[in-house]
Amino acid sequence: MIDLFKNFVNSLLCIGIFITFIKLIMPSGKVKKYIYSLIGIITIITIVSPFINFMQNVDVEESIKDVISNIDMSENTSDDKEQTSTNSSVKDVFLDKLKTDIKDKLSQNSVTTDKIEIYIDDSYNIEKMEINIKNLRKTNSSLENVNKVVNYINQEYGIAYEKINIIEEGV
Image (cartoon, rainbow, N blue to C red; front, side, top):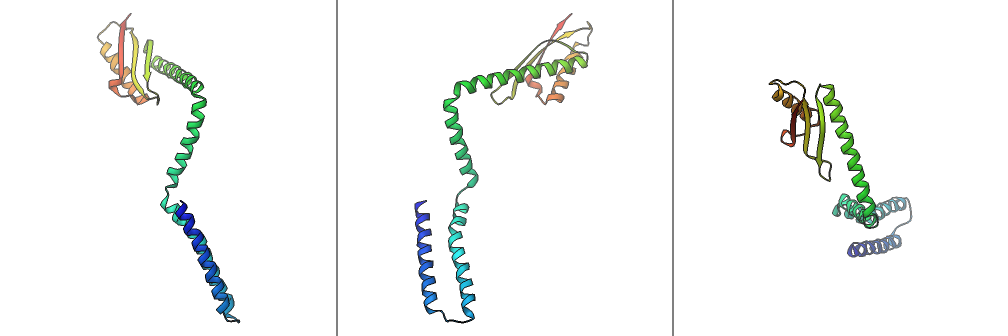
């Protein structure tokens, strides 16, 4: 970074000396305005080129992520306990809403549930789901009932079959 700044200052000094030299040997007349225009373009290129090189050499996205993570780290150290309690309450609300939604949708499909247990990780990905259902008909359709619930949960919520555990209770 210091080398980049040092090169920038050297470039500005060289362009200053070059402009002074050109002004000394420049003839007076109509060509003067074209030479000043050329000097202006060269000066602009000299001033802008280090910034362009810096932007090309440095990954701007990574720099922004570093700054944001540093800000997050400083905020997290002071509010860790508060953040943990907030995360757990958000997690609880999420689980309650999901259980209620599953219970309501299953009851609309004539499936009565006793208890729903959902286990999620910190990223709110469902690791395991246990649903206790009541078998209202005492026929051989219990397997059909279980398959119906598993397929419905899979289609409605996109939860893998192996994560869904159905426990059927007879009435």
